[in-house]
Length: 327
Image (tube, rainbow, N blue to C red; front, side, top):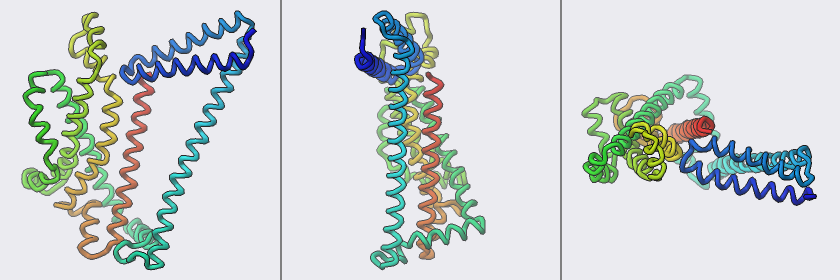
């Protein structure tokens, strides 16, 4: 007869080993995740049946496993709550210290402002509608540049993977373009595309397209050749290999690139608005500096931080949905 304690230890060890194997393989080949998941649970049934053979009942073992699972979920939930509380506490401590430092004249409130002043300006700009107008313009330009830079960079990476000849031809040019300061190309884009939305969106896309190309292309090349050989044995064409092996295996890298591109797109768009725009959060920052209104400058920076965070959370939500679909 296997004791409850022994059964629990064996179950925990079994799940740990299978989770480790599942994690390692799914990182390299996400499409196998569903098969691994079914294998894990099928093997669990076999293990449980073995326990039954030696006197352990199905109901008792299932209850033991469910209890461990609930304990694990509760532990993760408590940990996530602690993390959120810590993050919020740090933010509140920062604003409280900032407010106290301004009121006590530890810092110059004319230059660094105070949260109370920024809040009053925020309410004022909300009421007259100007903040929404400027924020919506910048958000549209950033999302457009973000999508354009990511899509174009991924398409270029796919083209280079498809043609080794082109990859060898353009490899040194990509290195040179990546080393160039993209912001310095802003005036050229403005002259070429005109002082409008198009040049600002192009600036947001340009600053992320090269890094997307390099990272995604290296991810394509880094896929294990054995996976490609397996599908080629069954007669898969190059397009089928890309669709069924290369692309699924590199989804984690593409998602990571999306997260990086969120920040890069904001930088490109804000710089573009510095140079040419008469609307947007970048324009508000420049205007605030010109009239020495640092409350407006800091308000614009805080709004940018909030919107960038929301975009990042949106990418993380997309990541969870894609991984769920792959399962």
